[in-house]
Length: 101
Image (cartoon, rainbow, N blue to C red; front, side, top):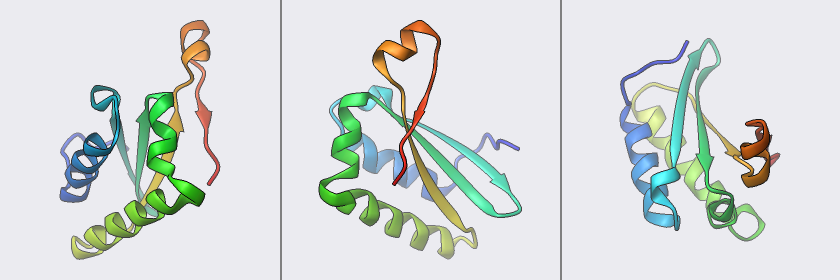
């Protein structure tokens, strides 16, 4: 089930990411809710993925911690997933690569 309204943690994440990346217009966040909690899927420009992950994953770990704390405050278990939309693959067939962290 995909919900249309934005939760406070989703708005915060979007604002945070757009402030960090070089292509803020390409930041897309999808929200899925199920029995396990909330999954926020982040789609970024390929050049921005490295910025969001950071050295040894430090930036994404910090972002995950912040979002989980805000989610707990709003009684939600929130997880993040980063999806890189590949430039050449996107043009050919719309394939998506998942980044394993």
